[in-house]
Image (cartoon, rainbow, N blue to C red; front, side, top):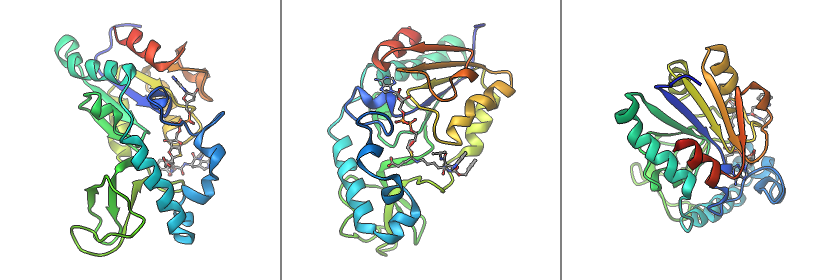
Length: 232
Ligand code: BJW
Protein backbone atom coordinates (compact mmCIF):
# COMPACT_ATOMS: atom_id res chain seq x y z
CA UNK A 1 0.00 0.00 0.00
CA UNK A 2 1.55 3.36 -0.97
CA UNK A 3 1.76 6.04 1.75
CA UNK A 4 -1.76 7.23 2.57
CA UNK A 5 -2.51 10.77 3.74
CA UNK A 6 -6.23 10.89 4.42
CA UNK A 7 -7.75 7.90 6.21
CA UNK A 8 -11.42 7.09 6.79
CA UNK A 9 -12.00 4.40 9.43
CA UNK A 10 -15.43 2.75 9.69
CA UNK A 11 -15.98 1.00 13.01
CA UNK A 12 -18.71 -1.40 14.17
CA UNK A 13 -19.75 -3.32 17.25
CA UNK A 14 -16.72 -5.64 17.06
CA UNK A 15 -14.36 -2.89 18.24
CA UNK A 16 -16.30 -2.57 21.51
CA UNK A 17 -16.87 -6.33 22.01
CA UNK A 18 -13.76 -6.75 24.18
CA UNK A 19 -14.96 -3.86 26.35
CA UNK A 20 -17.95 -6.03 27.22
CA UNK A 21 -20.57 -4.47 24.93
CA UNK A 22 -22.64 -7.06 23.03
CA UNK A 23 -22.45 -7.13 19.24
CA UNK A 24 -25.74 -7.36 17.31
CA UNK A 25 -25.35 -10.49 15.18
CA UNK A 26 -23.83 -13.89 15.78
CA UNK A 27 -23.77 -16.05 18.91
CA UNK A 28 -24.97 -14.17 22.00
CA UNK A 29 -25.56 -10.99 19.94
CA UNK A 30 -28.32 -8.54 20.90
CA UNK A 31 -30.57 -9.59 18.02
CA UNK A 32 -30.64 -13.13 19.38
CA UNK A 33 -32.24 -11.83 22.56
CA UNK A 34 -34.53 -9.18 21.02
CA UNK A 35 -36.43 -9.04 17.74
CA UNK A 36 -35.17 -6.07 15.69
CA UNK A 37 -38.74 -5.25 14.64
CA UNK A 38 -39.77 -5.00 18.32
CA UNK A 39 -37.10 -2.54 19.45
CA UNK A 40 -35.17 -0.85 16.64
CA UNK A 41 -37.73 0.59 14.24
CA UNK A 42 -39.91 3.74 14.38
CA UNK A 43 -42.96 1.45 14.08
CA UNK A 44 -41.91 -0.43 17.24
CA UNK A 45 -41.58 2.87 19.14
CA UNK A 46 -45.04 4.00 17.99
CA UNK A 47 -46.56 0.62 18.93
CA UNK A 48 -44.90 0.03 22.31
CA UNK A 49 -42.81 3.02 23.49
CA UNK A 50 -42.29 1.56 26.99
CA UNK A 51 -40.67 -1.61 25.64
CA UNK A 52 -38.35 0.39 23.37
CA UNK A 53 -37.45 2.93 26.06
CA UNK A 54 -36.72 0.18 28.59
CA UNK A 55 -34.44 -1.55 26.06
CA UNK A 56 -32.45 1.65 25.45
CA UNK A 57 -32.45 2.74 29.11
CA UNK A 58 -30.88 -0.61 30.02
CA UNK A 59 -28.19 -0.25 27.34
CA UNK A 60 -27.55 3.44 28.13
CA UNK A 61 -26.93 2.45 31.75
CA UNK A 62 -24.71 -0.50 30.78
CA UNK A 63 -22.35 1.41 28.46
CA UNK A 64 -21.52 3.86 31.22
CA UNK A 65 -19.91 1.00 33.15
CA UNK A 66 -17.67 -0.04 30.20
CA UNK A 67 -14.19 1.20 29.39
CA UNK A 68 -12.40 1.80 26.09
CA UNK A 69 -10.01 -0.98 25.10
CA UNK A 70 -6.61 -1.12 23.37
CA UNK A 71 -8.23 -0.78 19.93
CA UNK A 72 -10.04 2.46 20.85
CA UNK A 73 -6.83 3.82 22.38
CA UNK A 74 -4.78 2.90 19.30
CA UNK A 75 -7.21 4.70 16.96
CA UNK A 76 -7.19 7.73 19.27
CA UNK A 77 -3.38 7.85 19.03
CA UNK A 78 -3.58 7.65 15.24
CA UNK A 79 -6.26 10.35 15.15
CA UNK A 80 -4.12 12.67 17.30
CA UNK A 81 -0.70 11.99 15.74
CA UNK A 82 -1.46 11.45 12.05
CA UNK A 83 -1.87 15.14 11.10
CA UNK A 84 1.60 15.82 12.57
CA UNK A 85 3.41 12.77 11.16
CA UNK A 86 1.75 12.46 7.75
CA UNK A 87 0.06 15.83 7.23
CA UNK A 88 -3.26 14.11 6.49
CA UNK A 89 -6.62 13.72 8.15
CA UNK A 90 -8.18 10.80 10.02
CA UNK A 91 -11.95 10.50 10.32
CA UNK A 92 -13.49 7.77 12.47
CA UNK A 93 -16.98 7.04 11.18
CA UNK A 94 -18.60 4.82 13.77
CA UNK A 95 -21.82 2.85 13.57
CA UNK A 96 -21.53 2.41 17.33
CA UNK A 97 -23.80 4.27 19.65
CA UNK A 98 -21.42 3.98 22.62
CA UNK A 99 -18.91 6.73 23.47
CA UNK A 100 -15.80 4.58 23.81
CA UNK A 101 -13.92 6.24 20.92
CA UNK A 102 -14.31 9.62 22.63
CA UNK A 103 -13.46 8.25 26.08
CA UNK A 104 -10.41 6.59 24.52
CA UNK A 105 -9.27 10.07 23.43
CA UNK A 106 -10.32 10.26 19.75
CA UNK A 107 -11.30 13.70 18.51
CA UNK A 108 -12.61 13.20 14.97
CA UNK A 109 -15.54 10.84 15.50
CA UNK A 110 -18.75 10.85 13.48
CA UNK A 111 -21.66 8.77 14.88
CA UNK A 112 -23.67 7.77 11.82
CA UNK A 113 -26.22 5.70 13.84
CA UNK A 114 -26.62 8.19 16.72
CA UNK A 115 -25.54 8.07 20.36
CA UNK A 116 -26.91 6.36 23.46
CA UNK A 117 -25.93 9.37 25.58
CA UNK A 118 -28.12 11.77 23.60
CA UNK A 119 -31.87 12.29 23.75
CA UNK A 120 -33.58 13.82 20.73
CA UNK A 121 -36.70 15.95 21.09
CA UNK A 122 -39.00 15.16 18.19
CA UNK A 123 -41.00 18.33 18.96
CA UNK A 124 -38.26 21.02 18.86
CA UNK A 125 -35.60 18.89 17.10
CA UNK A 126 -32.92 19.64 19.73
CA UNK A 127 -30.53 17.06 21.12
CA UNK A 128 -29.45 16.88 24.75
CA UNK A 129 -26.73 14.95 26.55
CA UNK A 130 -28.67 12.28 28.45
CA UNK A 131 -27.25 9.77 30.92
CA UNK A 132 -30.40 8.81 32.87
CA UNK A 133 -33.59 6.95 31.91
CA UNK A 134 -36.21 8.09 29.38
CA UNK A 135 -38.93 5.64 30.46
CA UNK A 136 -40.85 8.20 32.53
CA UNK A 137 -41.04 10.62 29.59
CA UNK A 138 -39.14 13.55 31.13
CA UNK A 139 -39.73 16.98 29.57
CA UNK A 140 -37.31 18.35 26.97
CA UNK A 141 -34.96 20.85 28.68
CA UNK A 142 -35.44 23.24 25.73
CA UNK A 143 -39.16 23.23 24.96
CA UNK A 144 -40.64 21.39 27.97
CA UNK A 145 -42.58 18.96 25.74
CA UNK A 146 -42.53 15.27 26.65
CA UNK A 147 -41.27 14.24 23.24
CA UNK A 148 -37.80 12.87 23.91
CA UNK A 149 -36.62 9.62 22.28
CA UNK A 150 -33.26 7.86 22.10
CA UNK A 151 -31.03 9.58 19.53
CA UNK A 152 -30.56 6.32 17.67
CA UNK A 153 -30.95 5.68 13.93
CA UNK A 154 -33.48 2.86 13.64
CA UNK A 155 -34.10 0.68 10.60
CA UNK A 156 -35.84 2.67 7.90
CA UNK A 157 -34.39 5.98 9.14
CA UNK A 158 -31.62 7.85 7.36
CA UNK A 159 -28.17 7.63 9.01
CA UNK A 160 -26.60 10.93 10.03
CA UNK A 161 -24.18 13.09 8.04
CA UNK A 162 -24.05 10.85 4.95
CA UNK A 163 -22.93 13.78 2.73
CA UNK A 164 -19.93 14.37 4.99
CA UNK A 165 -19.12 10.65 5.01
CA UNK A 166 -19.23 10.31 1.21
CA UNK A 167 -17.12 13.46 0.86
CA UNK A 168 -14.50 12.12 3.30
CA UNK A 169 -14.36 8.77 1.45
CA UNK A 170 -13.95 10.59 -1.86
CA UNK A 171 -10.99 12.53 -0.41
CA UNK A 172 -9.42 9.48 1.29
CA UNK A 173 -6.37 7.49 0.25
CA UNK A 174 -7.23 4.63 2.58
CA UNK A 175 -10.53 3.21 3.84
CA UNK A 176 -10.32 0.87 6.84
CA UNK A 177 -13.25 -1.15 8.19
CA UNK A 178 -13.00 -2.52 11.74
CA UNK A 179 -15.31 -4.96 13.55
CA UNK A 180 -18.42 -4.71 11.41
CA UNK A 181 -20.37 -7.53 9.78
CA UNK A 182 -21.19 -5.56 6.63
CA UNK A 183 -24.86 -6.48 7.06
CA UNK A 184 -26.35 -3.00 7.40
CA UNK A 185 -26.57 -0.39 4.65
CA UNK A 186 -25.56 2.27 3.75
CA UNK A 187 -22.47 1.66 5.99
CA UNK A 188 -21.89 -1.72 4.34
CA UNK A 189 -21.76 -0.06 0.91
CA UNK A 190 -18.94 2.36 1.78
CA UNK A 191 -16.25 -0.14 0.78
CA UNK A 192 -17.71 -0.34 -2.73
CA UNK A 193 -17.90 3.45 -2.91
CA UNK A 194 -14.25 3.59 -1.89
CA UNK A 195 -13.25 0.93 -4.44
CA UNK A 196 -15.13 2.73 -7.23
CA UNK A 197 -13.14 5.89 -6.38
CA UNK A 198 -9.81 4.07 -6.45
CA UNK A 199 -9.27 4.26 -2.67
CA UNK A 200 -7.19 1.50 -1.02
CA UNK A 201 -9.28 -0.65 1.33
CA UNK A 202 -8.38 -2.70 4.40
CA UNK A 203 -10.58 -4.89 6.60
CA UNK A 204 -9.70 -5.66 10.25
CA UNK A 205 -12.16 -8.10 11.78
CA UNK A 206 -12.53 -11.25 13.85
CA UNK A 207 -13.98 -13.04 10.84
CA UNK A 208 -14.60 -12.06 7.24
CA UNK A 209 -17.52 -9.64 6.80
CA UNK A 210 -20.25 -10.02 4.18
CA UNK A 211 -18.43 -7.55 1.91
CA UNK A 212 -15.00 -9.02 2.51
CA UNK A 213 -14.35 -9.68 -1.19
CA UNK A 214 -14.41 -5.92 -1.84
CA UNK A 215 -11.36 -5.24 0.34
CA UNK A 216 -7.83 -5.17 -1.10
CA UNK A 217 -6.61 -6.74 2.14
CA UNK A 218 -8.14 -8.47 5.18
CA UNK A 219 -6.45 -9.08 8.54
CA UNK A 220 -8.29 -11.34 10.97
CA UNK A 221 -8.09 -11.38 14.77
CA UNK A 222 -9.47 -9.69 17.90
CA UNK A 223 -9.60 -5.91 17.61
CA UNK A 224 -7.44 -5.37 20.72
CA UNK A 225 -4.60 -7.17 18.94
CA UNK A 226 -4.92 -6.36 15.24
CA UNK A 227 -5.86 -2.68 15.55
CA UNK A 228 -2.84 -1.64 17.70
CA UNK A 229 -0.60 -3.80 15.45
CA UNK A 230 -1.90 -2.00 12.35
CA UNK A 231 -1.56 1.47 13.94
CA UNK A 232 2.05 0.95 15.14
C1 BJW B 1 -14.98 -8.53 16.33
C2 BJW B 1 -14.81 -8.90 17.63
C3 BJW B 1 -13.58 -8.59 18.17
C4 BJW B 1 -16.74 -9.53 17.13
N1 BJW B 1 -12.68 -8.00 17.40
N2 BJW B 1 -14.14 -7.95 15.53
C5 BJW B 1 -31.70 -4.34 1.37
C6 BJW B 1 -30.53 -3.87 0.77
C7 BJW B 1 -29.93 -2.72 1.22
C8 BJW B 1 -30.45 -2.01 2.28
C9 BJW B 1 -31.60 -2.49 2.85
C10 BJW B 1 -32.22 -3.61 2.40
N3 BJW B 1 -33.33 -3.83 3.17
C11 BJW B 1 -33.40 -2.87 4.11
C12 BJW B 1 -32.36 -2.04 3.93
C13 BJW B 1 -32.03 -0.87 4.72
C14 BJW B 1 -31.54 -1.20 6.11
C15 BJW B 1 -30.57 -2.39 6.08
O1 BJW B 1 -29.40 -2.27 5.82
N4 BJW B 1 -31.07 -3.57 6.39
C16 BJW B 1 -30.21 -4.76 6.33
C17 BJW B 1 -30.50 -5.62 7.52
C18 BJW B 1 -30.38 -5.42 4.97
N5 BJW B 1 -30.83 0.00 6.55
C19 BJW B 1 -31.46 1.01 7.10
O2 BJW B 1 -32.66 0.99 7.34
C20 BJW B 1 -30.62 2.24 7.37
N6 BJW B 1 -31.20 3.36 6.74
C21 BJW B 1 -31.30 3.45 5.40
O3 BJW B 1 -30.92 2.55 4.65
O4 BJW B 1 -31.80 4.64 4.96
C22 BJW B 1 -31.86 4.84 3.51
C23 BJW B 1 -30.54 5.37 2.98
C24 BJW B 1 -29.89 4.72 1.95
C25 BJW B 1 -28.69 5.23 1.43
C26 BJW B 1 -28.17 6.38 1.94
C27 BJW B 1 -28.81 7.02 2.99
C28 BJW B 1 -30.00 6.49 3.51
C29 BJW B 1 -30.55 2.51 8.86
C30 BJW B 1 -29.76 1.48 9.57
C31 BJW B 1 -29.79 1.71 11.07
C32 BJW B 1 -29.03 0.63 11.78
N7 BJW B 1 -29.34 0.68 13.12
C33 BJW B 1 -28.72 -0.30 14.02
C34 BJW B 1 -29.47 -0.26 15.36
C35 BJW B 1 -29.03 0.87 16.18
C36 BJW B 1 -29.84 0.84 17.39
C37 BJW B 1 -29.27 0.08 18.49
O5 BJW B 1 -28.08 0.20 18.81
O6 BJW B 1 -30.10 -0.57 19.07
O7 BJW B 1 -27.32 -0.04 14.14
S1 BJW B 1 -28.78 -1.97 13.48
C38 BJW B 1 -27.26 -2.45 14.19
O8 BJW B 1 -26.45 -2.94 13.11
C39 BJW B 1 -26.60 -1.15 14.71
C40 BJW B 1 -25.21 -1.28 14.13
O9 BJW B 1 -24.62 -0.01 14.04
C41 BJW B 1 -25.45 -1.95 12.82
C42 BJW B 1 -24.22 -2.64 12.25
O10 BJW B 1 -23.84 -3.69 13.07
P1 BJW B 1 -22.29 -4.03 13.26
O11 BJW B 1 -21.64 -2.90 13.96
O12 BJW B 1 -21.72 -4.45 11.97
O13 BJW B 1 -22.37 -5.24 14.30
P2 BJW B 1 -22.57 -6.81 14.02
O14 BJW B 1 -23.00 -7.42 15.30
O15 BJW B 1 -23.43 -7.04 12.84
O16 BJW B 1 -21.12 -7.32 13.63
C43 BJW B 1 -20.07 -7.36 14.56
C44 BJW B 1 -18.78 -7.69 13.83
O17 BJW B 1 -17.72 -7.60 14.74
C45 BJW B 1 -18.76 -9.11 13.24
O18 BJW B 1 -18.22 -9.06 11.93
C46 BJW B 1 -17.80 -9.87 14.16
O19 BJW B 1 -17.02 -10.85 13.48
C47 BJW B 1 -16.90 -8.75 14.64
N8 BJW B 1 -16.32 -8.97 15.95
N9 BJW B 1 -15.99 -9.54 18.06
C48 BJW B 1 -12.96 -7.68 16.12
N10 BJW B 1 -13.31 -8.93 19.43
